[in-house]
Length: 328
Image: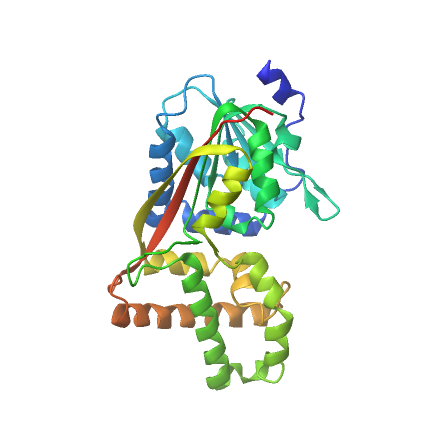
């Protein structure tokens, strides 16, 4: 019966070749130790929950790395639905996983300025479990998204999410969020523009571009929200038995530089240089600036941050686990 609900919704298939941006992001994280560690921690949390014949949704599946870890590490024979709002990124996941008969793909369609919810995309009470890896901090309307996840889950279904970009009181000095490093790289890159003659051509319009591009920066790297914000919205969406879990993860400078050099992300890290559609010279200059700024950041962290050393810094990942208690 539940399978019929899902199958009545048409799975997505790509209409274009895999984008270079999606491939670059996938390549930057698929073998990065910090990324695998934060995903594997989530897999360990959901391992006791997922049984044979369950339907599991990877919400915000991106380029498919979280799905790969689930499929490789869980022994249960489950159906996995990869759901994302980006056809470009989901296309990379499709390229990697479409030959697996237990995997289907669904695109959150956009109508005007609103994306369809999970329930509108796969059906009501269609899933046993939803996981969301490294994505929840990017969702602007968290209330609508969590309500849609609740409606898509069967009663007693579970929702597990995680992010390295959630504020939490009581963190030890030196433990960072992802956004802390991105903001610092941005500021250091602007300092280089102001002081390095090589980049003086950008000085005249810099202040205007800083103001113009602030919304683009927040679109790609939104301001972090506190843990309590997520828990409150979980409760309002009908989730109880909420549990939080935390893990400190070392991020190697080399892995983080690979992440920061993904060109699609650089449009959010330093949009003041070239914006969303940089020319070849602007693209090269932006990459040079971010690389230089990142190396300056790493030197700062090694010198001043008690949770960093000459190879890595420390980020805390926050994991939320909740059960849908109410019936729709």
